[in-house]
Amino acid sequence: MKTLYFDCFSGAAGDMMVGALIDAGADFGKIRDALMSLGVEGFDVAIEKVKKKGVMATKFHVNIAAQGHPHRHLKHIVAIIEKGNLPESVRAASLETFRRIAEAEAEVHGSTIEKVHFHEVGAVDSIVDIVGAHLALEQLRPERIESSALHVGSGTVLCAHGVMPVPAPATALLLKGIPTYGGTVEGELVTPTGAALIAQLAQKFGPQPAMTVNAVGAGSGTRDLPDRPNVLRVMIGETAGASGATETITVIEANIDDMNPELFPPLVKGLIEAGAKDAFLTPILGKKGRPAYLVTAMADEAAVAKVADALFRGSTSLGLRMRREERICLQREWKDVSTQWGAVRVKIGLRGGIAANAAPEFDDCARVAEAAKVAVREVYDAARAAAVKGEWINA
Image (tube, rainbow, N blue to C red; front, side, top):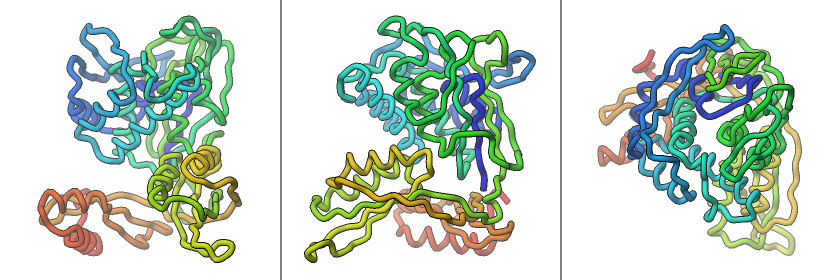
């Protein structure tokens, strides 16, 4: 299974994450083109190789014209991201990151997500960091993401509201349920942006898993630390799941017989956005013969609390059940095929290195079909036929 591991021994920030992912193989040119499509004036991005305590790393720069850092509400950030020419998965993931930050800020300030001012996080550089990180991950396409415990630093940090302890209040909320530690390094090592991204992306926290590492990347922070390189390291490789080994997953379920059916689609969407690997509905007959639905979500251990919270917030359920199960996942890889209407990604399932199945990416098929004014099924069938024949563009 293609796994990406974040090694946060010097903390985590958005620019460090983008730099590390580019250093590990993401295409900076494609990321820059997508970022420029956001329609925000007065900024550009660049990368350079730097040395931190003898370690070479990639520094991701967001260069902003002298115009200050405007305070934005969530609706303004949503409008910027929705305007950009971004893959739908990147758009949705970026909006989810900002939703998490908005919820943390709202709780800190006793406000609502609609009224929260984003201050530093609302600045252009943070919008670029968050969208840039998701663009890089879309290119690298890890099947699983894990992270070390986060080194948060110590002391205080100067924020828009004054001097705050490290980690800052919103950062501390974003890191609930995630292993962190302090230490002797003075200052903020984990920013709100870094905390939100790691909390959203990582499915498990702990030591590096047993894996065959194929790529290593280091993303540089701005500061120079006294006792260590100020870098975020990523390692990408194949874990034991590549041969079809078992792994553990938590199944979360609830029976619901008193909810407006129109609310079920957003409930399922909310479970996925909270970190569920899958979520679905099963029609059942409840007590006294009443029609009901069994809501099922599957999540890794690190996401269980957030998925359970999303189920309670999005439904009328007063309780849920959880159990641990074993599952086998095929190794997956992505390749592109060409159809007469355009290129389509295909997801290939491998067992023992041998292809067991291949499925065209539906969103790609729908996009190509809409542009060509043809039926989605025509594009899907053509892409599948090309995959069966092994006619890969990127073979």
